[in-house]
Amino acid sequence: MSLEITKVTARIGARVSGVDITRPLAPEEVTAIREALNVHKALVFDTGAAGELDDAGQQAFARHFGDLTTAHPTVGAVDGAPNVLPVDSERGRANHWHTDVTFVLNPPQASTLRSITVPPYGGETLIANAAAAYRDLPEPLRRLADTLWAEHTNDYDYAVPEEEIDEEKAAQRAQFTSITYRTAHPVVRVHPLTGERGLFVGGFAQRIVGLSAGESRKILDLLQAYVTRPENILRHRWAVNELVLFDNRITQHYAIDNYDGQPRRLHRVTVAGDVPVGIEGKESYSIEGDASHYTPVPAAA
Image 1: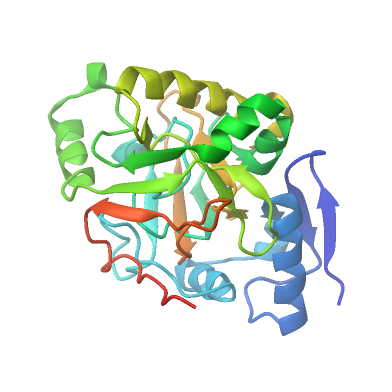
Image 2 (image 1 turned 90 degrees about the vertical axis):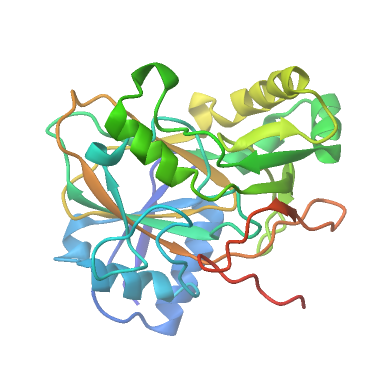
């Protein structure tokens, strides 16, 4: 096996070479990639290795790591590809820190992004290591975070600020919130493969269970500041037809709107995940919204 892993930063990110992800992977290649993902949280596959990867190839690659979700609980998929979500600057810009689809009971375990159209400058994706953020917490703050639960919801549009709403964006917002989801997750999530603890917050976390909105915002902002420390972030500048795989259970990401409105389009395919578990072994619980059409909830062990 000629697969090579090269670190990009000290705390997050590695580049993978020596593997052709346009073909079925050998079991030992899948194992090596999964182990690298556990360590580095986000993996960039060389453009040359990606070749002419298409929607079918991206889905086939993602299936090596588990069953796929459909594209999104409320947003439409690419025509003819129900598992592929178009991340298109013309449909909205997610310039906000978040973990994918945490407002459902079992968010995706991993996400793949493939670049279709990239602007000549800007348009980077930031990915942050939430496990490193947890380790950075001072002990008193860590003890507090260990006890907290947060309510995650899609009942607001993280991609479109209120002051920029026009008729088209209002329609996009209506689609995004066409089914209301509210789910309570532990603020500190235990990774099921590594046992690492990570801060499980991000943009969809809108309230701390048992606290007021104002109190919640102060605590969430404080914890979020540790996630987005520069030391914890990979800043990925896209090339055309490039693929990034990241662990959605222990990262956050942010698409920077710094490309003057030029075309930018990625395709996203996500791998179905497990129900998050806190440090005491308690699982997340749904408050509102059925997402079974998007991702099945795995049976309890």
